[in-house]
Image 1 (spheres, rainbow, N blue to C red):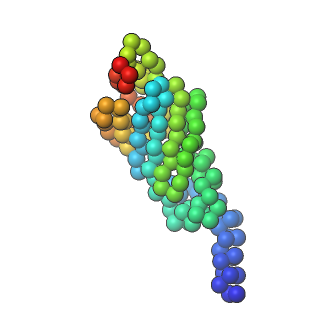
Image 2: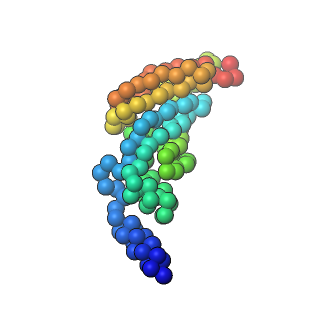
Image 3: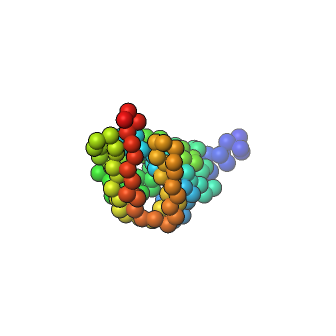
Length: 144
């Protein structure tokens, strides 16, 4: 009985502690992949101990705003998957197609990404450190 009361008190305390305290989510790497005119961003991150317990107890919906805040400079953003260590975000129409190639013009991210890895469909990747914009890139269409 004491154990149940302790667990209930812990859950009540966790429910009242704001997850959005500064520094609770540390993005270690952001990977940008291309699917036609869309970009898929995979964020790898670490949560502090209390935030991780909160997510395990109540779900990841409360950290979604922190993930989405990284993509406010884009128009059409879809947070597809979110977990304790990784989130997947699809951004629509960031590239355009012409004559068998996709062209991605540099886009201001609105914040600094400490580590951005850009993976092209042909398997080639580039790493950018402390960047606040995506690079100018073009790549051949898979069907071309």
